Image (cartoon, rainbow, N blue to C red; front, side, top):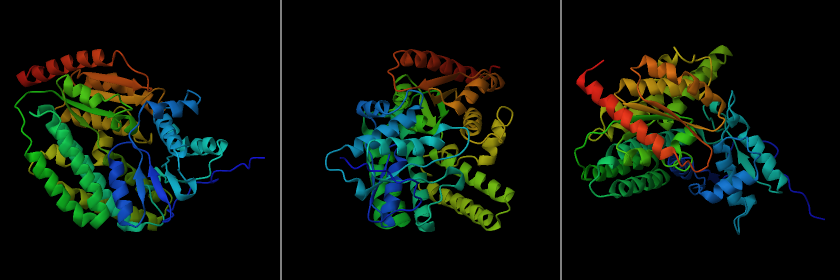
Length: 416
């Protein structure tokens, strides 16, 4: 009789230094996290970017009602578990969680049930968003190192999006960017924040050497559910498609969400009268601001102020207030607030990306017409992704980019 093997019944919030931690590939920020883990003595690996096989695995063990990020992360974990020679006893899976009106809070629980039903025993590490992703046993050194790395990738991506549409040698910007991300990971792993400064100096120098052409393009702000907007496979390579159609893109940064979780932790601690936690959360937010200033200095030669420094979360929330109030916890407040911020910075169009059947996403879609009307009827396109091939995506974006170019031209002429 085959012995049934149960998965760990509860999530772990600490790291076993004898095990390799596997992170699903949402975006390149995962490489910064792996570098910070290595600096703290923990081996981590980023799972490969998603592909059709990932989708096949995820759909095989889902009912059809789950959102795309759940399907993709589940599929990637299952590919790992079923790969030849993989030993679950020497590994742990990293899957953060959250509370609030979003199915993300159930990812870990459902994945654990799936793995259990298949007979896999493996640790799962899950940390809570509104506790500002506090990891119990790694302390401030990991948090600071990881934060600097995440900031660095945010800024490198802005350099990528600012440069690639105008490159004279096709593929050069991608090559420089990939090399920079690799060096961020290696420098963090080898010498922490000190090594990161040297790696960024080299990356900025290489970006400065890329030859570009002068060309007018409309700036397109991309907001939306964080996994879909950040993951190239999940959003059908929308950034590259917009660039091919004549636009220049900025995507809401990953670190924006982390600042938001700081704010929620401070507010929750104040409400619960947890003085020590309140002071600790306030200090963490303070030094994260200091870290942002320090990392941004490396990019001063190439990035304008709007790209170097993101607005405070309080500003983003005020931007959203006429449409979605802060009392609604989660991404919709940030999505609307960031869209308004992009419009104020000169964006000629807004793309809102969300998974099919995303509950918070439906709120943003519902108010998007109001935001659009209040800001000069700026072109705004809501795009839903479920992993299916979208034959009309290019057509919809062609029409959107045509409108964005007209909108930008009208603003340039000063017409109402």
